[in-house]
Amino acid sequence: MKTVGNLRKTRHRGEDRVGWVFTLTAAAYNLVRIRNLTAAISP
Image (cartoon, rainbow, N blue to C red; front, side):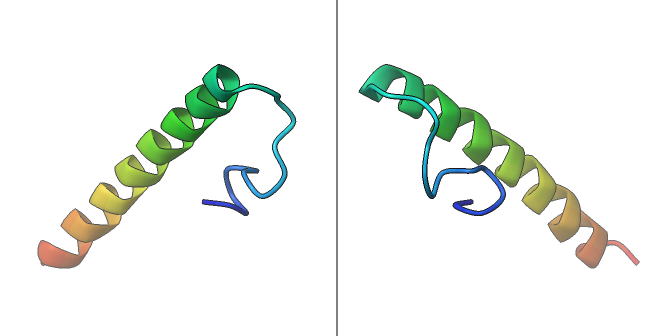
């Protein structure tokens, strides 16, 4: 998530903004992960 979500060096300052970017990145990462897991399970 550091590389894809640009969290290695954030553009924003403050806990609220960085927290929002982290939440958005984590949600997108989990959606892609769920898609890949379900594709691996179904034949």
